[in-house]
Image (cartoon, rainbow, N blue to C red; front, side):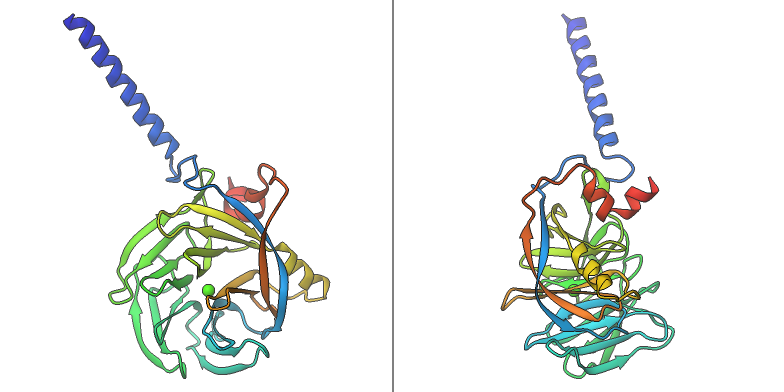
Length: 295
Ligand SMILES: [Ca+2]
């Protein structure tokens, strides 16, 4: 009996070891599980309105500030700035030029203060949203400064990796972070962010895709495919434009605005579900350039 129990115990131990190994391997070197936390939905957009956008603006951060006003952060060394922009005309109403050594990145508005991060540095800047005067600086704990957004309580940040950070806006310490995965693969290059109705939306750099993320558990809620916008701009002869980058949400009127780097237009878009089934591998090809091209 004792040996029977011992055998059972050994089998159970072996089983739990195998289970543990399977667990480790399913949670392999990219820290992703094969399963999705949420049912993933797929959307496209059509254009509701289009507005002028400074074609010299290398858009890195975008948000809606109420009263048909946008705030925008632009990048490139020597050309970086923070701007207050009239939505309807695209006219830049206020502009704070940054030092030539700085490359402006993500921007968000919390209360009356704008927070901005910068490329390749851990320093960020705080501005008064009324006149864009600089109020101070901060240091963050992300590996780099790419995107920022807020739900009015915490700052959400991205650094070009697959990690979505939640940051205390008082201490700038990371209070939590989540690795974002789609079908067992990390979603690298999370870029410009927006808090939209309880979700975090992120541009995936080098793609025309926005990923929808639950800030509660880091699970992927869906993908929005916006290839039609850049295709239309190219068809119109805008050959110098770069990638889609910039999401702004007007929570009062539930309007979504998107633009891109050096795009002459800013679009208000309607997001609608794709009726057809998404073929295997299509999202990976369109939206996961790091995974698709380098593995
Ligand atoms: Ca944004």
